[in-house]
Length: 176
Image 1 (spheres, rainbow, N blue to C red):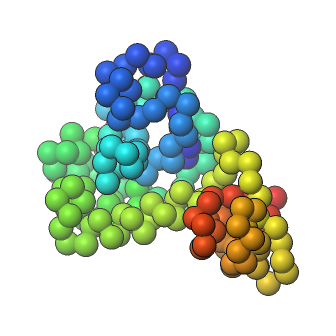
Image 2 (image 1 turned 180 degrees about the vertical axis):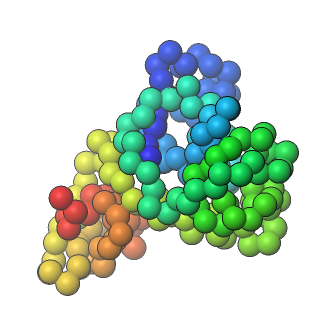
C-alpha cells in the first residue's frame, strides 16, 4: 500500500516538524484498522523505525495490500499500540506481543526482522515517481541497471529492482 500526505494536511504539526513530507510517497509498513486507524510509516530522515500516523492525513496512491502482511484480530496489549485492533503487518509483528516495543528498543532481533520486511516492501509496488527501467539481458532474469550499467538478477517478487552496485531503484522489466 502506498500513500501520500493529503493537501489539506500540508500545515499539520507532524508535517511541519518534518516527520512526513508533502509530495513523498510512503510504503505502509503496517496498518491499524480499529477505532483509531493509523498507518505505520518509515521516514529514514526522522527515525530508524516506522512511526504511527493518522490515516485521515493521507491519500491512498495504491491500495494493494502487501504480500508480507498477516492479520491479527487481537488488541495488542502494549502502550505503543494504543489499543488498536485489528492489525495488518508482518507475521512477527502480529504474533509477538511487544514486537513494536522490541523494535523501538532494538531488542530480541526485532529491528533485523522489520528491516528485512521493509526492504522487500520498498520494492514490492511501483509508483509514478519512479521513471527508470532496468533493461532485460536474458530470460533467466538478468537485467542491466538504467544508471550505472551494472548487470544483476532482477527482483523475482516485486515490481521494482534495486541495483546492487549504485543502489538506484528502478522498474522491473519482467513485471507488466
